[in-house]
Length: 82
Image (cartoon, rainbow, N blue to C red; front, side):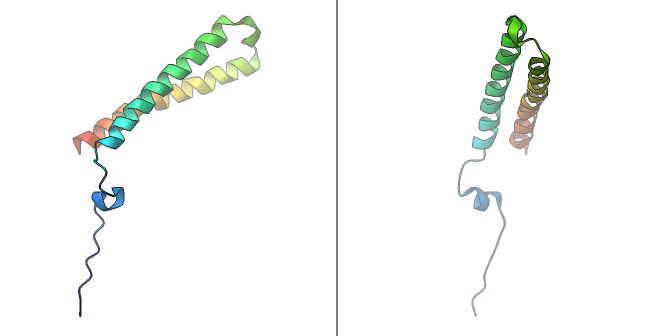
């Protein structure tokens, strides 16, 4: 009878994609997230017609998204260190 070896390695799940690719994508997404959300905040603070409840709500969402963008490089660094 033949033995079946099933291993759950990271390379198996990634299909041979280099593991450095995902941390690099995290960093690229982080730069895009930070840049885009800072632009949103800048536009809302400079355009008086956007300074209403909806605009302030969007600023709060942008601030929360900025925190996510700041976390992504930490996540990427943890993957590089492993």
